[in-house]
Image (tube, rainbow, N blue to C red; front, side, top):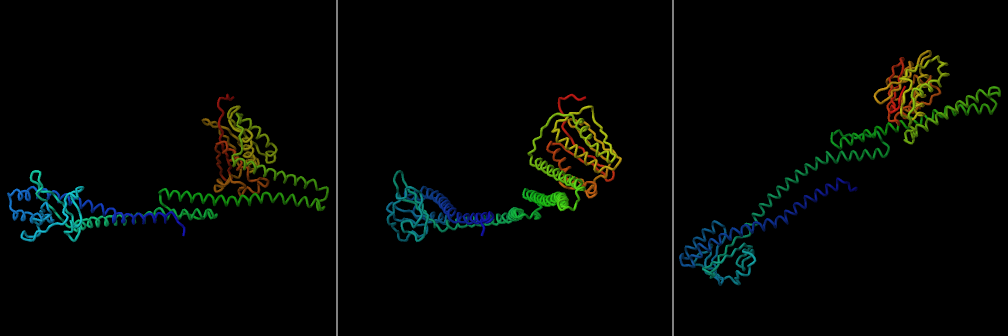
Length: 473
């Protein structure tokens, strides 16, 4: 059996309860008995001094007869529930509150009041005079400096023990009530803390085994509830990541397999003579094109990997973004002629300096303009615009093409993702262009947004930090 934290806690709880009762039964019991004995002895001592001075002293001074003194002793006995003796210095009992005066005088064997000088009271059988434990207080009767006799008060220890037991019973009842209440708290703790923690422990085991679909059914709004919510969110993200990884591998396998199949087929056809020599150049150019596509795909994946791993060291400089836009747009002259497209540049000022990695931003512009050309309708215009806002420069690339469906807006940044409507228009695309765009912009700690309407067009807008201290014309 596993020694879980809860079992240890439960064992400690039961041990605490047992030790509490044991403490009351032993330690507290003795303390209470000693306290009650001392308290009773104090009361007897006060009465002993009173009897010695007012009654016994008068008897020895011959101002009160023994019969009168005996009557007073009997009255005090009834009031205090204690036997009162007058003892001679030799140890003979002259008067006993519980026996008549004409009874035989008893001599206490070995009587020596000085033997208990360390305390004014004693417990026991008082020199063998009692058959049960008795609390006794002895006080001298003096006349001047002469000891005439002694006053002894005796009360049974049974009464004190009974008082002690009544107090202990109250303590046991109080402890029992506390134990019941603490048990209720323990049960509440079990349902409110332990069981949720056990659910969380079970969930972490499921996650460790790869079952990210397991959900923790805790809906409280405390720290444990928030922890469960965080773990559920983590599991859903890991599950989505796992699904994305599977999809990523499937996509990359497909994108590598298609050109490799074409290359293999054409080369085999050339080698076995299926393709005649005069046609070989055409198909070798196709093989070269497919090879270039594979190379582009590999380079794009390497770039994305470096961006994700934060290994890419940006070479930030101050450069004219307007010039970079002009140069990038000019490189698409041939592509624009094929579809009879025009690129209109709406640039702020003759020059507009930003602080960024020029080559990476050029790649962002290239990918966005390339996308705009692919999905623009023939005989349309693509707009590239720069504007200033506070300390930022906003760059916009807008087309009037097929647009992006609303349910695909958030997915266009995923690797290898292609909108169904675009697959026929983007046969040579890798599906990594926008992923690279987003990663480059984010590694610059900037933002990029997209606004699109189906059959109207799409606009991508990203920000760059404006250069400081550079004059612009």
